[in-house]
Length: 101
Length: 172
Image 1 (cartoon, rainbow over the protein chains, first blue to last red):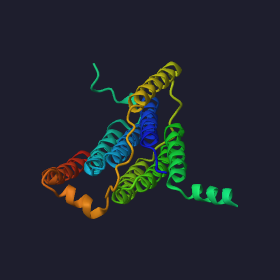
Image 2 (spheres, rainbow over the protein chains, first blue to last red; image 1 turned 120 degrees about the horizontal axis):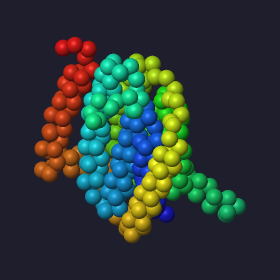
Image 3 (cartoon, helix red, strand yellow; image 1 turned 60 degrees about the horizontal axis):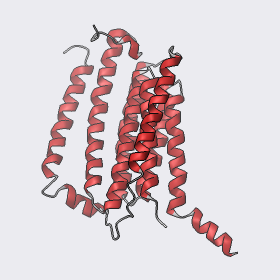
Image 4 (cartoon, each protein chain N blue to C red; image 1 turned 90 degrees about the vertical axis):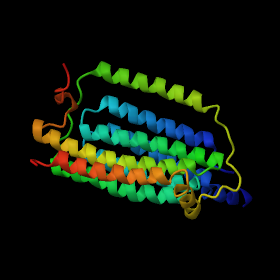
């Protein structure tokens, strides 16, 4: 008996939706950031389960690239968070409206 | 006696472990979005990432499982915690809009329903004789199709590093 592909995909969809709710509900920049990481991980899980179901390693190579991009994104994003904190003295997303008009 | 044997066999089977780690992943993911203190959210996210690493191992991709621990739970989450402690983050005040929260949950439920109906058709059995060991992974990664993408990611990392230093520096 092996793990059903369907259940791994449902888990992936569930984690993605939890990440979406977090992005909608939370106002702290860093928490929103963590929810984005959660969504990236949900997609990675779908890649890995499809890779096993199709018997191809391409999905796992894509997971490798997603992890690289996530690392780069985290470095740049957290640098932006530090710069925002220095300018506004706040991490509340509602405080950052300088691009609005 | 036979039923106890079968129960024991089920408890150590990969299917049972998959459900255990899936439950841990979902519970800690809910912890990420429900906790007010961002540091607690970060620790919940580390639990999610470690459970996902175990699931990758159970799905037969040991290299991705190890990478998940080293890169995500190790490097990225340490960076998150480092910034959280550097900035001395306060607890988030409860957000004002109750209607906005309800709308967010309804939208997410719609998205979940759509995803589940889309995924319901994807019912393939695992391919037989699937070799996901690290050497075969490396042969694909450094093969003709992906080697230039791999080189491009090194440029991406350098650009991200320079950009991060540039953005976070007080004055140039």
